[in-house]
Image 1 (cartoon, rainbow, N blue to C red):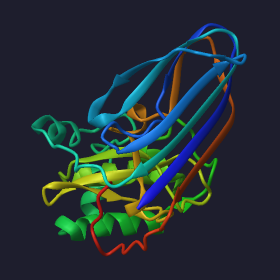
Image 2 (cartoon, one colour; image 1 turned 90 degrees about the vertical axis):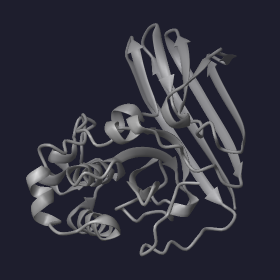
Image 3 (cartoon, rainbow, N blue to C red; image 1 turned 180 degrees about the horizontal axis):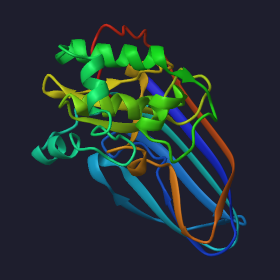
Length: 263
């Protein structure tokens, strides 16, 4: 399967700032790509550093003014299965900023009592998909799984945070992945969960908005705090335009009764 994606950002820096960009596909992907970063029509240099699990971060120093960022990528073939270390299991069982599994432990035990393995994974995915409404703009960037559970609405990251919190409350390691998602509608950056089950990381998407087999990994971490596509320090930076595309030459049929892995 051949997959391609693009991202276009138009920013306005109100003064000198340091940007951290996370829009490139993960380091282990077989990709042909191009990233351009312009300020007032001039190419800006950037430094790239690797975070966990192949996450690539671009560090950019900017001055006041407009910044245009364009990224295109074509991915052919499949990535290798992610390696798993002991510290991964420890880290992704712990509560985190947006996945408050300790606060939701009692709810998770009551709702999914007696379920284990794939039955637990299916039960949590179905429960979150059924009880939440996908409403763009309904949640705040500071909302975590507890707020999402109370509001019963949100976007992809909110669905993923609640899934992760429920899984961790049942002692299943779980983490967040930002992805490009061919077939997604409305098109945007997408967020899904990964659960460590049967000796591998299995992708979980309670929104059901895109086939899991077509997803392209961007960043991986505990929750949205580790996977933001843009963060900054210094002067305020405004995001004025964001356009994302993602397509596949053949869009897979996603059988939700089967486990799937990010490739």
